[in-house]
Amino acid sequence: MLSVLRNRTFRRLFTAQVVALLGTGLATVALALLAYDLAGADASAVLGTALALKMAAYVTVAPLAGALAARLPRRTLLVGADLIRAAAALALPLVGEVWHVYVLVLLLQAASATFTPAFQATVPEVLPGERAYTEALSLSRLAYDLESLVSPVLAAALLALVPYSWLFAGTGVGFLASALLVLSTALPGRRPPAAAHEERAASRVAAGARLLLATPRLRALLALDLAVAAAGALVLTGTVGMVRTALARPAGDVALALGAYGAGSMGVALLLPRLLDRRGERRVMLAGAFALPGVLGALALTVTVGRGAVAWAGLLGAWLLAGAATSAVLTPGGRVLRRSADPADLPAAFAARFSLSHACWLLTYPLAGWLVARTGPVPPAVLLGALALLAALAAARLWPRTDPAALPHAHPELPADHPHLAGAAGPHSHVFHIDALHHRWPAAAS
Image (cartoon, rainbow, N blue to C red; front, side, top):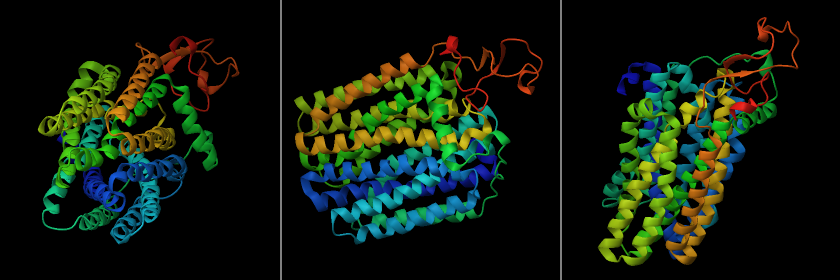
């Protein structure tokens, strides 16, 4: 897996991602504790609202950012987003009202919604080989796990020495370091759009969404995103309330609980390249999705019957398993998306997937946060577990068991001498993507 780090461009981009995510992980812990200071027992509701605003920024900004990524210099886009994120993070410890938190989270996440799709669309151009890109996806998943494993552990150590407000300074430093690394990296040139792709930004946004919604495996991918969002929302909004209020444990244990979630995710991400070669994306991702409702059901049972150390161990175990299942679903997603779109469509496709997947979190974050604050952890665990199960069942139905890359199809709308037909009379077959010439998935393959 580490062989892809021999590529100098990817190595620097990956390092930029790591340092930014380490800072983001510190902010995750600090934001939970800030919400607890400002709202007490209602901290989960405050977090749910703040994270819903984060998702609103992703849903609305990411598609436009994906369209702009095809037209603006990549370096300008990535560095500008990092500088805005750093400024917002450094301002967070100065707030004194809940609404201040909401404004700064919205600004920070709008910048992240610009950075992330542009970054994701750059990696397959840096590493065009299938195996190398798969390894890069696993490394990228590990980088995200640093946000939920190493950062919480680091936060727990720092909290023994400094107030939690200092964690936001670490976030700002991470974003500034990311900007410097991107500035020092030779990025691939912007791909000139073909005539079929010379559209207005709004048209490119719509094209990315159409590609996702017209491709069966990508519709399943969105259902899988909903399953992950159902479980992940409970982890990120409910942990502070479960640890500090329900279990009456110290602030450092919030970081440890989030670290357990990251540990499970990291362990699976390390195994995925070989597992995907043997099992394929569909089997691995569906297995992870069906595990999530079981984990949430087990958590509800443990919290109901357990007390003290038993409940604490049950929470850590549940978050460990939830992280493992989440990684099994999320890590192969970029690989599935990459083989489902033409290279020129990748920026718009990644941005559309980023936006639509985060619409799932826009639903589950406030639902989880408000329910935990009002009812405790058991009702939301049951409700979100049921939602995850329905999403997993939908994904299994939407994703065909036999899903070849090349599909036979016909073009009755094209003249016989059209260059795409290359002299073929009637149906022909090639690697099939939704694009300017292919608007619908072949009926026999959907």
